Length: 214
Image (tube, rainbow, N blue to C red):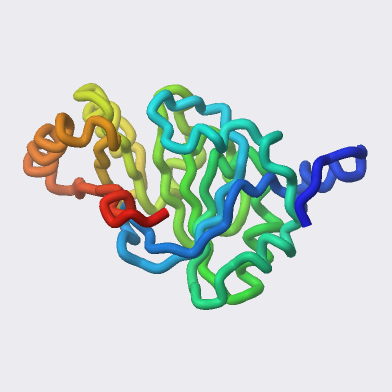
């Protein structure tokens, strides 16, 4: 059940991660990164103070716009056809992800997260997609734990910034460069040239937007 917080006891439940500000929950096809094309259920958690000017879900920033929801009710919203739940935001690591991931795993489902890495890692994850942002760089502890580094390219300097992070990732981390949607025509030639020169990188596209999917 969704609700507004109106007592210290309820505030404690949020602090523990037993209740979370749920913005939306939906079943779709993963459109980006290493798992592009895979069916997955997305759980979007509200609240983010990273503040990317090009963010395409700015409505997620204010957690107070999204009444808190009990973890068991978030579980009830998960499509029974899925085998993977992607927790995204906002910035999900603004909150304690331990109760949510434990509950998801109790259903035998894979847990994926999409995070800027601006906060310390919580939760148990089968796949960590780190998408760092210049406005709030990732904490050092998350870098070696990420399975995927996905850097959004808005301008040429983002390519150098991507390389500086790639040097800090684990040896098995998948590397992706993704054009910011509004600059894709301008940035794609630069990204293609960079990938040709540095073939450890791959290109990620927001294919769900091309397909008209959420």
